[in-house]
Image (cartoon, rainbow, N blue to C red; front, side, top):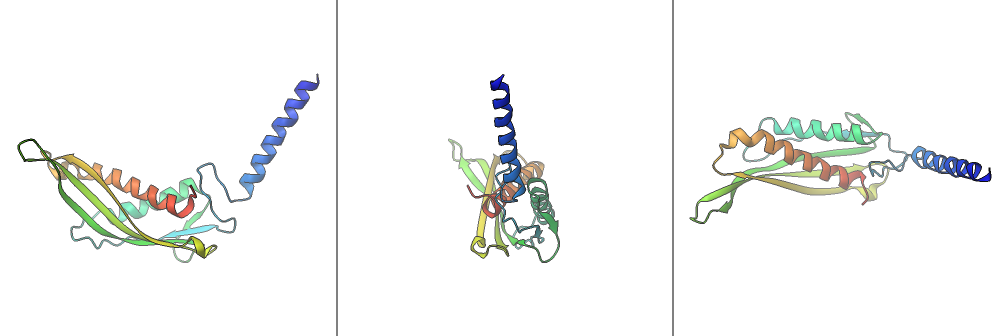
Length: 172
């Protein structure tokens, strides 16, 4: 009879520990490490300063980044001054040859998107950063770029958002 009671006490201890850690606000199961006093985050629109402009890119990047913080943290995404602030701009949107075939013809092209990000942590200024992030996708040169552009942008923006999220609130 002693074993079931012991197991019950052990299980209650584990549950209590998890509740204590999660209520502190410093940890989440997504791996986010956010200061306990940080309650809000703002993500400003990313203006597009690239030489070549994809007209949907700025809105897509901004919306996807806001949605990532809203879904993966307990932070309230607001406009204006916040405990954590993300600003930046799109600095490059380029396509170029990525590889050649055996007869020196372009076989793969590469779409590259580069952004510059500034992160301000008003709760912990040591966590502030300014950094450029760049991601790319290769695609078959035989394909019309406009037929693959939206799917390439979707994949690249997802990775860029993950990069910003990880750099700003995940301490791996």
